[in-house]
Image (cartoon, rainbow, N blue to C red; front, side, top):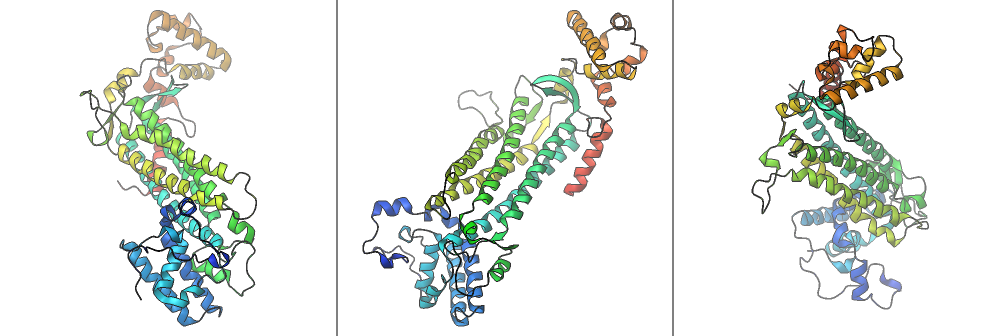
Length: 471
């Protein structure tokens, strides 16, 4: 028996329509359908149906021959969907009903036994957990790619000192490698959140049915194992109503998006004429339709912009779930579009950020010429006085007065004579000049995790090994 590859001109009876005397209106049908977006779950829906059919057969709830017919029919339907010849019908409402109805068209009466001991409520939760599990694996692979790109970029710029900022004001000199590895650390925590989320996702709702479970002798552990879950969910009401796993995924995505937005913001600033620290290649830049001289770092601007979209998806779902009574409510149909959008957007943001990182260079000369401004070695000078036995608050005051003298004299700390320094404090000696200037300042950083060369080298070696970077 063949599945029609053209939509039926007449509306067919709903699979749930036994107690209804009238069919729903066209307006209601259009408003309530979800097939336009939840067809993205088809592979996971078919996976769940295969596991469920096999379990029903082993438990004696359907015959082996019926199970074989169902499994062969599901294989054919998956092939039709994969090659684009399957027709999705709005009057069949959602991905589950489309596949089940098509299966009935294909194998007949056996297909009507597939829905034994399950509901669309547990079915959709199972599909969505499977989909989210795969989504996390995809996001994690993109995170690693970005981390590798940032580490490689750091390796190409060994020894480059840049101004470090707090409050967007010049603060202390740092190695560029140190700054790039800060982003690697941040997105590693993003990866950790996703790994933790995946652990909580990986429990199986299938067999919880509508909300109360079933009196039929099903084996939920069998279906859970077949689908690669850790175990069945313990509470059937929780199984069909829980969307914590989706909220957690979208929350993790939102934090990742914020980190990527911060990276985008920094690189957009650094690519400006005002900074001039960063040179994106033409391959990751765009121009202006009216200003021929423009070269814009648009990909990172869009990374910054799309973070709002990811955060918005989380907020939409939080508001959706607020105040819902137990157990399943049709409101939850609205959970899928924010999930699909969040995952699609974060994957794109990660991918283009890695691409951008692979196609930028840093303007060493511009950065070097910009370093003297801002008295970046002031804190190192305060540390010098502390090493001489002075209380830090006193040293802070003395260095502050030294900076004030520099401002008046229009010079840098390292340009002050020893006599000028001693006019502020007699503690200063000839060895003070070993602490002044950005190069000397960076060399003095030695605490674990600091921007000192040896510390940064240790960090870099750690990430090279962890990420499996060769060469």
